[in-house]
Amino acid sequence: MCAKDLRIELRTGEIVTTAGFFAALVAILAAVSFYGGVTAEVEVDGGHLRGWEGPPLPAKALLRIAVQIAPGAIWLPVAFASILALARTWQREREEGALTGLLVSPIPRASIFLGKAMGVMAFVVAVECIVVPIVALMFHVDLPDVLASLTVVLLLGTVGVAATGTLFGAMTVRTRARDLVLASVLFPLLSPALLSGVAATHQVLTLAHHPEFVTVGAQLAEIRDYLVLLGLFDLLALGGGLALFGALVDD
Amino acid sequence: MIDVLQVRKVFGKVVALDGVSLTIDQGERVAFVGANGSGKTTLLRAILGLVRFEGKISVLGSDVSKEPELALRSIAYIPQIAPPIDAPVVEVIRAYAALRDRPEEATYERAKRLGLDAGACRRARFRDLSGGMKQKLLAAMALATEAPILVCDEPTANLDGDARASFLEQLSERPESGVVVMCSHRPEEVRHLVGRVIEMAEGRVVRDAPPAEVLSSREHARPSEPRLKVVRP
Image: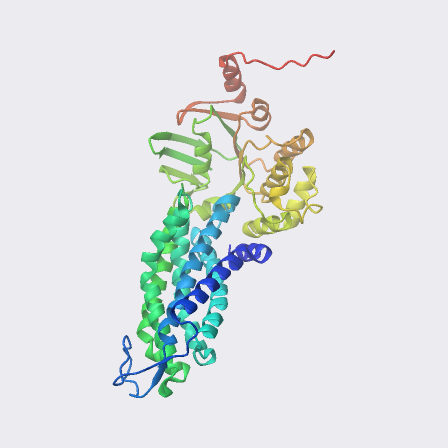
């Protein structure tokens, strides 16, 4: 299933191209609207930064204002692009009737779900590969300092987005206003993963400025709670998908 | 081989299947006939595990609802309407062969016998093939699985005379223990292919008899239809 979706995508390029372009546009718009490329910096008052729950920061530490906005500029385009990718990938199944061919094959429904979710995850990761460098460039983020931690956060978030999206994509594919229904249903459901992802990304970007948290291990240890939350969300999404997918794809 | 027990399926207010029970034994070739909306395609889809229903259908002892992957291991399916798959023919054949754990060559060989050189059109998109070519390829893929149960919906509707003859020949080569289950509106197809006809109406089995008996009474019951007469000058 995953190989089929990837092969079709390699041939047509329609999902990654459109979703990637859209995500890049949203990221650039966010940068221009909320940041404007200004390299203004805020001074941390009394060792505490609003929204920062980590250890006290040095009183005179300077953090770029971009750190406050960049997490949203990464996750919003990724979330929107995921909906586009999900809608298109299920629309393709519906139009081409390939899903029926798979359903009458001697393979477990759970395998079909996993294959589809892996395909969606590959598309979202491809979009992230476009968005993250753009955000890093626009928001003056030193990508090498945060890349490893950011990758862990994004991958954990993407698993949950892909699994939940695949399940609800299967459910809404036969509805009339499926794109609207999918977005309306999916965003509230994804909110725990998206909020954790944004918060964890914010911490990673902030920690990178702190001399005590330059190593990946130190950064990940500091955001451990968010990673656990993302992991739990992934487990729930995957478990729910594996258990319910079969019932959702039957008429 | 196939046991259908008190199967009921409702779509909204429409009762598509109303307590259908039947058994299809080893070696039987069965056709479901009946008017449009009589429930034959829904029953076929229920046997394939494509619809949820009340009751129980088991294929070689495996419950279609609970363990479809086991039940479907014994079934090959030829749909009436070919899905408009965008992928090239070669990829469709490769994917199907991989799913059924069969060599790709078997499909090419079966297709050739049906009059389709699948190798020559391997780069063409499946959806761009003609209706007859798609039907030949679907039949070839299903026959190549050598599954003990062949389920088909109007299998020869789009086939030309030679392909139809080859299809019948390839069916006759199947092991005697094999089962064929089909839906059809074509009396000549039913006469040639099956030994048992199950007539359905309003989601129920109304008759279960040899083809000659069912078809002759259906033909007598049908009002005379206007026919187009070709007059040579």
